[in-house]
Amino acid sequence: MGGYSEAVRLVGGTELRAFMHAVRGEPERFEPPESSDPRLVDPVDGAFETVEGATRRLETLESRLRERGDRRAVFLTIYVRMTREVHDGIASGRFTDPEWMRRYLVTFANYYRRAFLAFETGDVAAVPDPWRVAFGASMHDETLVVQDAFLGVNAHINYDLALALADVGLDPDRAAKRTDHLAIDDILAGLVDAQQTALARLYAPGVHDVDALFGRLDESLTLRSMIEGRAQAWRVAVVRTDFDTPPVPGFAKWVLRTTATGGALFVLSPQLDPAVLAQLRAVERDDTSLDGLLTRLDEQLDARHR
Image 1 (cartoon, rainbow, N blue to C red):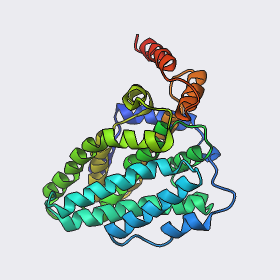
Image 2 (image 1 turned 60 degrees about the vertical axis):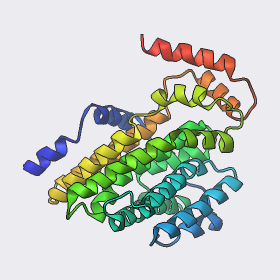
Image 3 (image 1 turned 180 degrees about the vertical axis):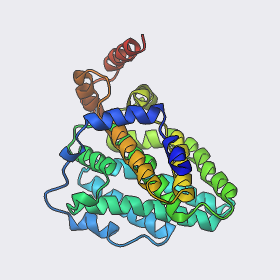
Image 4 (image 1 turned 30 degrees about the vertical axis):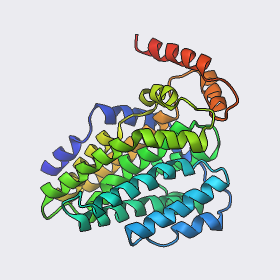
């Protein structure tokens, strides 16, 4: 019972809200492409073995997705840069256990690789629900760039990360490994503004005032910040490591899947007027002015907090 009690503690208020969205949503409606593109399959066909190799192949995939206007590229724009920065941190001696960090990055990247490959090739049963929502929604040109970004971040951090951590191992010297895990938070924090600017430049040419748009949408579109998600991932990995007997691992994975799926569906259902969302998409394409729309958006967000 001790392990089960520990697993139950993984369910807090954020998780319960995510469960509600997961129950109401329909991840199965997000379908893969009718036929796979060999140029997209090639970079993810075969396991990543080194950080350098993973980064290079993900950069190739990002470039090919952008060439064809596929918004699945948005998350990769963020992820490739984050991976590169963490790898630079390893090279500069920022981490206590550099070899563990390399395995951490490669294992983590392979979770993304497998999900993308399964979705692109139509192996729906092998695609975790959070990724099915993220990939499917981003392909249908109905999302904002910020939604595409958060959908990928949600699936990779709120679902994949805990599983990757358990795979790569937390022991021996768990305290040092946890310190290295937490050190990534500082790297991510330093990338936020640069990432927003890159997303606006590459995918939303009409968004000249990045903070004006992204800053107003962050609260509406995120269920949990990246840092909170990474903290929860460590807790889940600890439970899966320390209590590796049924039903604890299965329950912990169910918490991950349901929370991340609910998070994805939450990202797709911000409490904003559909007309405002349509106008925001027009702003991203540089088809209309941002000023009047931001005023209207502020009014809606203010009304939600009264």
